[in-house]
Amino acid sequence: MDVQLKRGLLEVCVLAVIRNQPSYGYKIIKDMKPYVEISESTLYTILKRLEDSDMLIVKTVEHNSRLRKYYHITSRGLKRIEEFKSYWPDMVAMYEFIVREDNKQ
Image (cartoon, rainbow, N blue to C red; front, side, top):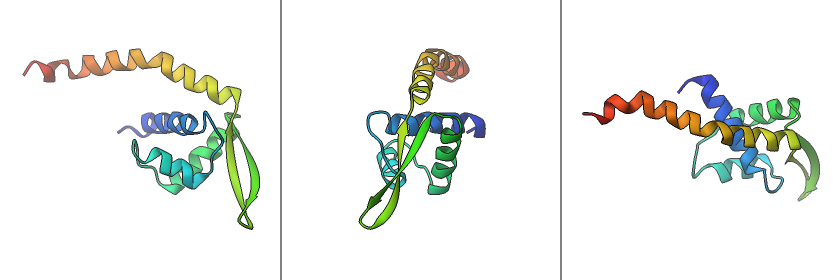
């Protein structure tokens, strides 16, 4: 898959995981696993990029005598999810155009 396309899709997937409640790295990976595999290094790169883009904020909380970073979605992050959802019909149409010849065989 094209790296840029995959990166954009993974960003929206990460935002979707934390849309309803804040979460932390390991749990984000676990929640995404039934749908998409993501490595820790990829996840933390995405989380940093989303934080730098003001799509999420980070709060550090002590948990079992250790510090854990919780990621919270911002209004900008919610807007990014909505934008993706609005583009989806066009993406499906493009996919159907690309594979139309495959379906004729």
